Length: 507
Image (cartoon, rainbow, N blue to C red; front, side, top):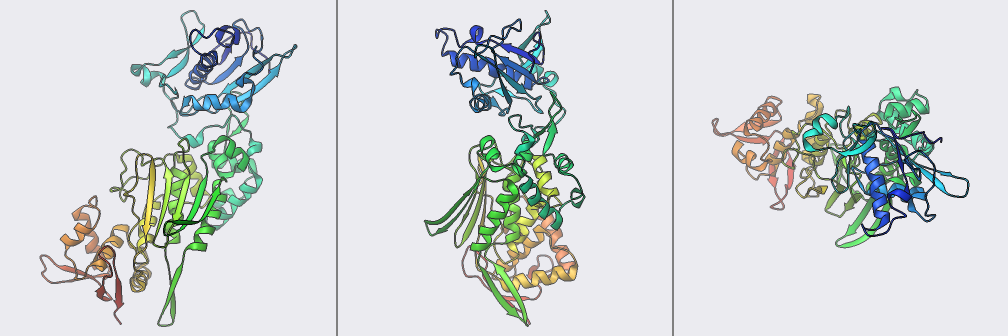
């Protein structure tokens, strides 16, 4: 790469003889001062139009080379690691070394224009701007300037960012073909006729580099179809673990650092191997009830991979006991979402491009209401609904509890949905679960007291009216304050105070 004749908004020269490595230590370690100079330039360019940073070049464009042959900036991974660790959100850069006559080397750092504001790890926000004399500098952006100086055309989305340290060769043909399988089964079939390059473009796996316009992989592409060695090098947190316990004893633990589709397959394989099934025959028809709903678990996995914080430490962790199952993912709920308002929260995600890619690939619920699937399917077998109460600011924890299975409830729900030609709503399913759990047919007040407080009383009344109109529930007692039951179910045998018990099928 030719060295430009001078500095500009997209070109910066940093000399180690002038800027740190050859200086004394009176102002602190020279490595730290040089690192800070480079990081400042990266942040300034990322918040502007991107560009190239030449290390070992003087102000007038003379290539001097880095004087210290042991400098970490001469090692690609070490240089990228310094920048990744000292920027927030972490910036991934390109790196190139050019050896000069005499053995010295110039390093070129390639910075892409960011899609969102970037800061140094100490909180300073910089932007590359011109001084009055026409020379560029990395100037602080003050709070009052944010609205005018930090304007970005796209919202913050980690998964859309270009991985400048990788190339399209790091995207796997095997993983791309693996992804086409769920697309054939239930994804966006318009993708199937595309060439590999057009497929990657359509899915958001590649974007043109803003500097030289060459197609580069995005974090979404690396997460979905990246080669495992490239994924581990760039995103070591993109990993998952499946664990099985007997009491407090860990009997199986499987770690994986694979692209999402491959991780999905492996996690589902282990889940099915350890998820027990019970069966019963009614009138010659066989019914099977899983210990934990596969549909609910699958959609929980989708949320864990699509909405986790990939810049945060930790991995997707699935833990299974005989009587409970948990799925943990790094990064708490987004602003405005709590465990109590999940039912009605507007669908949103931490990584929208990644979530869209998973939806088009047929991995995620196409309606965007995966939460409805998680809650309703976890109740379908007579279990309690999925619980998010243990979620913190650092991680989302979903817990599925095993209580007494209920074949009759499972059968009657399926029968009504078949007759109605549609599914029962999540709140409707919660109401039915609450009715079934009571020893005596409950009143509206009793049902309201059982359901999450975020569900308004009037909505519960409306859902009960719909269930009555659909002939799913019965109404008895005082017309002003009736009792509600489930048509076709009579007699209830609660086995524990915390969970519903068996019901008796009314012939």
